[in-house]
Amino acid sequence: MKKLENVKALTFDLFGTVLDLAGSLTPHIAEFLQTKGSPISPEAFWQQWRQRQRIEQYQDNIVMMGHSGYQTVARRACIYTLKRNGFAADEADVNRLIAAWQLLSPFPEVVTALERLQDRFQLVALSNGEPDFLEHLAANRIGWEFDRIISVQVVGAFKPHPGVYRRAAGLLGLELSECLMVSANSFDVMGARMCGYRGAFVNREGLPFEETEYQPDVTVDDFTQLADVLIV
Image (tube, rainbow, N blue to C red):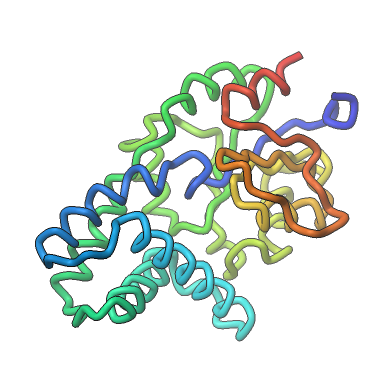
């Protein structure tokens, strides 16, 4: 694609894009709910948890709290979701559910696709997670050595704060248009595009994109298709 010819770095969202959050976490949620005798489906619990986590992140940005920590907001959202569903949300229950985040796994085709892309682009993780957490996930769960791992903590705000994308490009020594944001989160692609990045929307679930003029340059079903499109 001609408009992507000058792209030098792919900046990857990790949570939900590289890492399969639902596939990794719902089995642990199911075990927890079974021990509690709860009729709630693990899928419904996870959807509530994920939605609340995003609200927590947006609230941090809006009230300018800074980056209070990805695992911190996941924990706050977990407590909210437990209470919403009638659980006491005691510390042991919360710790049990939060511990599962250390065991996240990538989507099955991701590493093979990264191998195909590595000779053509810098491959960079650009994530809302804390640096140590991201290093753990890359080394021990994804099994991939990114050219660089950039946490939003360097800016002090969650994506899609514009400072995140601008700072990442600066750290890479690249123009904004030389970076391609790869994300399964439409708000992430939109935020990057608004700052001058190119954007790739990994739309595994066939969801609509944001109602905005800042559309992705390419939309793909998975990482295999992403590699097919980018390697020409």
